[in-house]
Length: 433
Image (cartoon, rainbow, N blue to C red; front, side):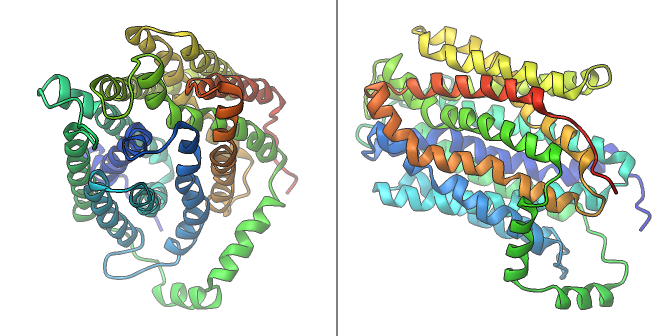
């Protein structure tokens, strides 16, 4: 169909739900390790307790994408998934700070991550559904803006509630009140933002609804979806295989950052233990650092839009990964809280590139009509390294780090540098037609 051009305000409306999704995601990334430790988890157990997040993404994202392509009802194609995901995620955010046992927090993380994935994957397809091709870049740029805004505010929220609004820093043996309130606010923002998009942005129906339903009937079934997804691993274009290795080492470094940064600086830089004020202060400062790197990524993303007009995306990505790797590894050697903000600049530069440059390199080599399918397969090389890290990182921490929670960050920095070197192998070449 010929899709009409949308105004900037209409593009804002259709993208606004991503602010809520990222708000919930940011709270999860900045606070889950500390919540686990408040509930009695040991440092060497944290990686395994995070296993729910990548495992859920591995299973849900390609499946949800596959079935949302084949959905049409009174709410539309993508909006039913937005709504169900937002309702479930908001309920999990409300319940999370009331976890009374470790197993309860792990279960709620699983629900939260599944719900975020349920909303997020269809949102990525929503831009292509609604906008003509010449406006796709504007649509995805708007999503990046809202992702950055949600990440900056949510990551720093517990620190702001403690230091600006005067809430108690420590919660005794339980989860601090500032963290609890941050999750309540996150639930409200997540649901409100997604509802705003649902209410302001209708979807286009299939051109031929009857043929759409007949085709769905012919290609229905979870088994078919699973076969297609796994078959894609063995039919990847050469450039995609090369990028997959880069992604593998990239996401090892990122997952180390997300799991261990907050609790690591709370224990090793602030000298705190779970339950005391110094530990809570350290975790809150970790959220500020996360806010810093997300803020840098938000700003640097605009610079990337200019840089790609003059420089090869492969070169840009290589340099950004190298800067991020050195920055992440340097955290191991920093002992003053304020200086931790410095490596966040380099990590933010890398994060902005990670969100965009791999896809800029990948998109030109994908066969027409299978872009969404291969993007789902590409997601495997984001979540598989996270699963491996969840299983093996804790053991590495005990044996190599002697309990020092900053050792995984040093290893993660090295992994990002390896990814930067491997970027040199990437060749953007289309397969013969």
